[in-house]
Amino acid sequence: MKISTEIEGISMHVGEERAIEYIAKAGFDACATPDDFNAHLDAVSSEYFVACLDIGHAEMRGSNTTAAEMIRALGNRLQALHIHDNDKHYDLHQIPFSCSIDFEAVIKALREIGYSGELTMEACDYFKAFNKDNVYDGVVDLARAARKLADMYDGRPE
View 1: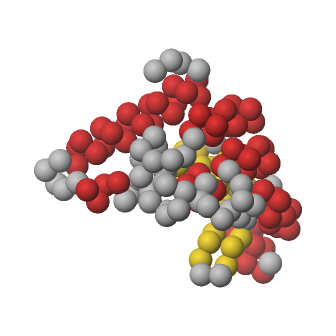
View 2 (view 1 turned 90 degrees about the horizontal axis):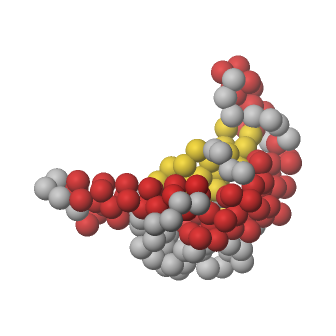
């Protein structure tokens, strides 16, 4: 917990929150379930630590949860989202609505908790299919996906 104390001190000094994200690396899984994520936040017990949920990671097979379940469990602790799509087997970092994640369920859960935090689109692997001559097309696709998410959240029809 030494590192969390040091980070908390820096956060207090600059007056900014720090977001904790689900981590899965070779035998190390932290914040992979709603209970575990909340337990980590409880352990640091600081107003300067909030949750960052990676939608794609939460939907990976083997996590035994869904992004919607994580959102509801984290509630107002959730202040940042990393949004991307995948096939639930591999961490593909594709644009929303291009693979298997149920974004209607995600948006419904976000609306239920009154989410007003940050959104980061993480579609880096999607852009590997583009080059300098057509990358604008990829940016347009990403913008359309972002607009669709925003419209769903605001209850606007497609």
